[in-house]
Image (tube, rainbow, N blue to C red):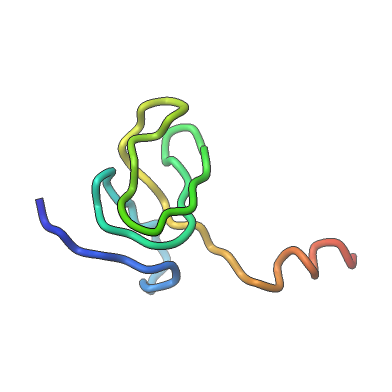
Length: 71
């Protein structure tokens, strides 16, 4: 297995990049199978809800929550 680290917002494109459990990672991710969310600082875990091993990186913005409530 390749030991490649990722950081939130570090890829471009119109597709969803998937990351495997055990991969060195930093940021917010959601399980590709059940949608469970995690924030990681070291390695992606196996999903504690469904035992899934594939994660999608969350698209997060520091301003998202503040603008979501001012509609």
